[in-house]
Amino acid sequence: GDLLGSANLVACDLPPRPGLTPWLAQLFVEPTRRRDGVGAALVRAVLERARQCDYARVYLYTSETLPQYYARLGWRVVERLPYLERERTVMDYEVGLWSAPNIGMQPTAFGRPAAEPRRSPDKQERQART
Image 1 (cartoon, helix red, strand yellow):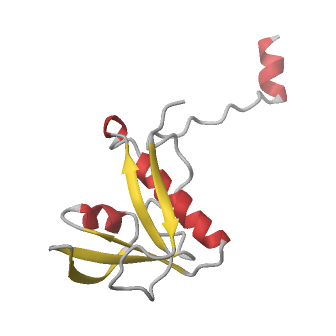
Image 2 (cartoon, rainbow, N blue to C red):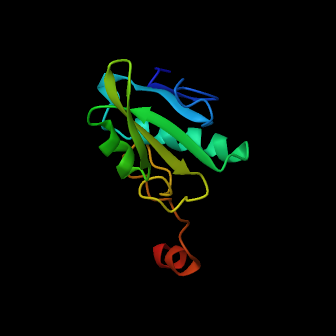
């Protein structure tokens, strides 16, 4: 299959904040698959892995317009700080809050609504066909 994207859960991604751990890092989605829900699916996978490892909170840092993207997924701004000559936004997500927008939703086929499950016809429907 084709690589759609990748994301990592790392111990430390922002040297000025070594006490914060773990971090969602290096989120990448193949440009042709952006806006298909691949990024949100990868974020969900990283958060699930953090939960399995008994972390209560996950951090990330980003810049430019991406804080708005993560805010829609339920992340909150912790602080803004200069790093590598740019302003960065540090955000966090409480792993136990699965009710946050888009994170707690039922799985979809990368942003497209999941197909309705096929149900078996009940006894009356089977009899009506005969």
